[in-house]
Length: 411
Ligand code: HGY
Ligand code: MN
Ligand code: MN
Ligand code: MN
Image (cartoon, rainbow, N blue to C red; front, side, top):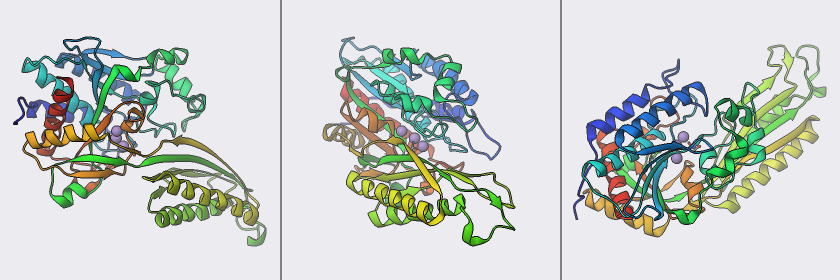
């Protein structure tokens, strides 16, 4: 059956391009870190954008921006479509924004077509999906289920501001976070449209995909303490070089991930005192492990912990680490995948099931409610980079599949 209404292509694209201008940085990308001035500006814009589309808007106690369209049965469980508008450092214009703007446009189209649904529909932009500023992430979606931990609020950004302080500076009251919690039975389903951020759809020459399995991320913050000393006067045999210990751990991250068929990245790293003629006394860095199989990700972690011990013995350094994010891999719900597949067919698109390497708020929602994801082709699979791009036609296709999925679930 052909879809009974479609998104307004020009409105969708203009909407995406208007957000692309918010938070442009000096390297040509977009930087809107959680609760930063750039993020707050984009959040303000989104509230207006949702209102203009005809949604009832509110911001919950943990900072999620929620636009709601009532259904014929107001207290029926809501169909939620969402993603995020916070970005990584020097990121691209589609990661997250496509899912939020696409969902707003899908609901705008339903309102314009005068189609009233049984279930309420909510579009949610989750606070701090990326986790780049504090090294955690999925904060807003976790907050919807009362899962923002004390440890998370104690994490500090590069300026030494704790997450709790950042929330308070943005006008939020951590003591009220519990008020944002939603009962799973109040949610019928969660759907997220997102760029693929990899190359499968491009290789298959397809516009959209239906997500099956999503890798689970495990993030560590590691601090190595050695001994700063004179680069010229200190013999190699008596050094406690924290940077060399970090270097060996980095190579072990790569080896463990490659051998276990997962992925491992050390993306954020610094040494102290960071001087050309000083042996690094301290090294601080992140580890990002992903796998679709928890047992294998656990093996990656134990190999790295083993490496910590070896480095402590070999170099006389002291290594401490904190796990700052640990989310289990997940498989999208069968029934939602079927609805998305049927929506692809009614949009005249092939059905292509695929796995997801990146992490998403869908991993958190999926612990509590039926969930699914729609992928949109990424040019050369590039993401978390200014060259991240998806063609307008692919974005429109994804939004129409999202619209039909929402309509089917909410009718
Ligand atoms: O890290 C991720 O996979 C996502 O971009 N938050
Ligand atoms: Mn991202
Ligand atoms: Mn994303
Ligand atoms: Mn996401």
